[in-house]
Image (cartoon, rainbow, N blue to C red):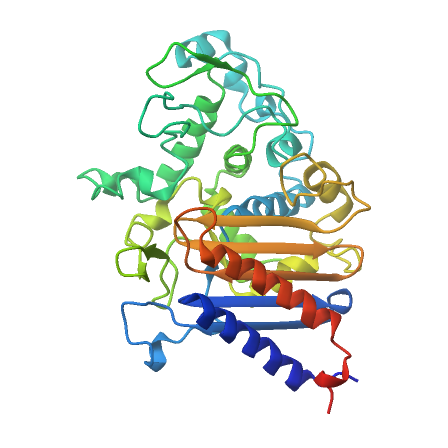
Length: 408
């Protein structure tokens, strides 16, 4: 029999070694095995690099939250699946059915909409095959932000945070404001053909099944808000309390306990806290559902378990319905390139101050995740290699679980 304390020690040591090798503020790893019956995790490092590295209050623990970036998208799909089980929506519910005012031509004309996407279904929005790309303005190629986008709802810093905010920030700090912003995003996403910013170039509509990866899950949140009369923030809090009884440990907004998002500072060669992500507007990000969810290692382990075919989750959601229309879709949800019989389900997440990776072998009864609250910089930055190395070590420990070197 495997020696669990020795395996835990090996896991902790691997995480410590990777953190030291790459100079990371923190790193976390999660292993789920044996059809979800065995869970192991590690958290190494500190919460805030601007504070003492030896202070007990600054040490990261298993109770700390890590931002998972775009893994928020499949998490949102999972939460929508729970609402579908409750009868709030169906996978086939269309935008038109939830927002009947959109069927009015005078309304559409007044808002600059047409009827192209009115019959788009929930599963298409969550699977990113709706043909909407989640952005609605693009900068011209000769702009200094070449090939970028200027979607004001995409990142939390776009609400004026990055530039110090303004006197009307307080108006956005309410559930009602968040519902309005998501409704506005829905309206804007249904506008007529998109053009490059300050350009006559017509981008046309995006090609179904190949394009659309973006923030369309936000529209599903808006649909749930219309059906329930509650903000998605309120809906999510209720779901976290029941039926999961808090076991998922998933939140949005600020990272608690002094944990910080960190970015790499080339001048000093160090990771430093990013105030743009850590401020009083952060909890009022209307599109947190696609990039702003945070998990503890225990919460991530539970999310992995709920996605395993060996676990009976029928009381809260239908895994077959969830994985078939959402997970198997191109470029969306928990990505699966070879059909539902292949493995793993996977997704990565990144912001300017965090990185995360997730792999779920849903038929084989196991899964792995690595998370760190640091990021930014070029795609080949060393900490990206650190994330991959941590994921490989999690696989290695699983592979060698019963090896003698882990036994007494």
